[in-house]
Amino acid sequence: MLRIQNLSNCAVFLDFDNTITTVDVLDEIIQKFSVDGKWIRYENLWRDGKIGSKECIEEQLKGIRVEKETLNKYLSTVKLDPSFDNLLTLLRRYNVHPVILSDSFTYFIQTILKNHNIRNVPVYANTVRFEGQRLIPSFPYRNSECKRCAHCKRVHLLKPSMADKTTIYIGDGLSDICPALEADFAFAKDKLIDYLKKEKKTCLEFKYLKDVYDLLKKAQT
Ligand SMILES: [Mg+2]
Image (cartoon, rainbow, N blue to C red; front, side):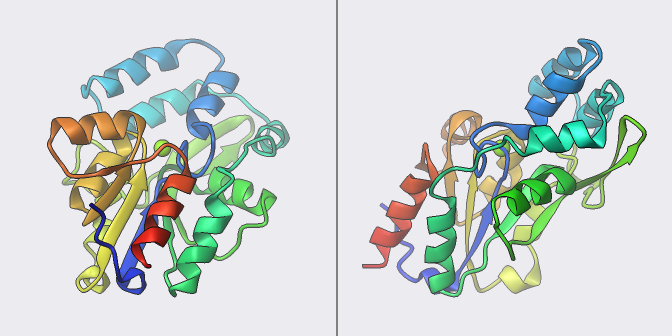
């Protein structure tokens, strides 16, 4: 049973790829714009836990060649979960200002949000710059204590300002494990829910953000 009766005392964190968007944007960029298939080897090593996502992303980006304009064109095709807007409105009604935590890149995320006229949602992610057709990553939120993530999202839930808050995390993938284990409530789907179930972490299953919206709204009445 969900016991988030006081939404106004909650801090809400969302993953981006395949949580707010309907596809995994970084995965699609790697698949579309890699010049060879080397990325597959790193993807498998990462999935098997043999390398962390920093090494995986660094190696995979080495194989990408894309003009900024071509990338932007792709980003303009990415769709958002249709209930993201409603979820934002509901949260803001309770004075909750959600934050996006991603192990992808700020540039991709902010471009997509802008394309959908979504404003004022803070984004914490890795950063990337263009060097001709190459994408050069950097990792401003690297946590040396975490071997799994390039951007360990857990640190945002551990900030002193979170001490009195009920933390809610919403995500789908392996890079969501650390924050989902830390959160008071985790909404999970796909690989994340499989992992959390195995670890016996209590979580709420969702398929679409409408499920999250409905549960949160219902809990307030
Ligand atoms: Mg994701």
